[in-house]
Length: 374
Image 1 (cartoon, helix red, strand yellow):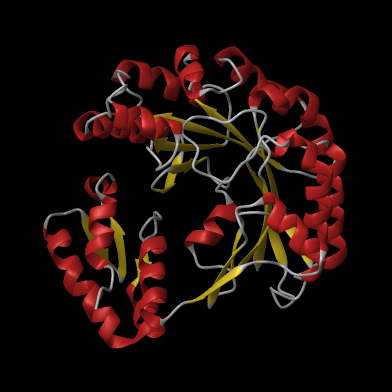
Image 2 (image 1 turned 45 degrees about the horizontal axis):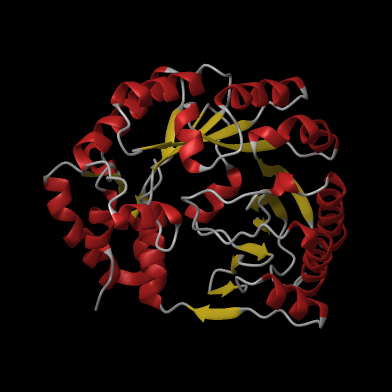
């Protein structure tokens, strides 16, 4: 199996925290859609005929595209690839849902991902989000009415001055809406973003680790009580509703990334499309994809395997580790894991190495200790 990711970089306005490639040049949507369809044609052999089981439109804001643009890209995929899609996801902003959602369902889209972030209007304004808390809740209902039974929403925690009670209200509101999936992330200060600049100037103060941990602990408890499975560090799903596309990233499954700023992985190499609309569109129009390519050595493949596997609920199969990378890497990993096993932040049972609950919040430190640095 394999997946296709389509990057749609267009946004009506930029959020202060976003580090993804995006643009407000909406006038280029037609040219961009044509370029995406052309790239799909040019790269039809990249996945070597593997069945396409997941398709994901991310951004940016895919819901800023006219519906016929989504349809054209989907038709190109179906015409060019061996599609056996089990999951087709489109990211959308809550304030775009009403005009967009019925048409998406008609096109065969079976999963929506909404960037709600918070149900606090003051914090939504702080982030420069375009929707209100009321619109967010209404958007979920509109999607359900249109026939969607696989809806994911994103939440953020750790806002400057955010209290634990405020975060509890966000989580409780989310789980009360009848959604099937929740992604929750600590607010990140990405380099070069307006948010990071505000922090550097001292306009805002970053939430301390102890407070963030309390928020994360509540998230774990509340989602479990609501029947959600915690299947990846930041992701929670009702039974049978895990994100198949994102799971492919964590399990090393090949995927083709299409569009400006998109990444691809064929199991051996990574490719990176330029973060430039003009370079991307002009290159594709001339029949050349201006990507950069990175070949992974054995140590890099090992690091990738460990990093992605240990983010998941199941963790890493140590037998598979030895089979793929040999005794040296296997022994290195288990030796470095021992201190965390002793501290009960890692668990090794029945050949599976996985994060304990106490290791989830410090996962970056644990994973760093297991990375091959020689």
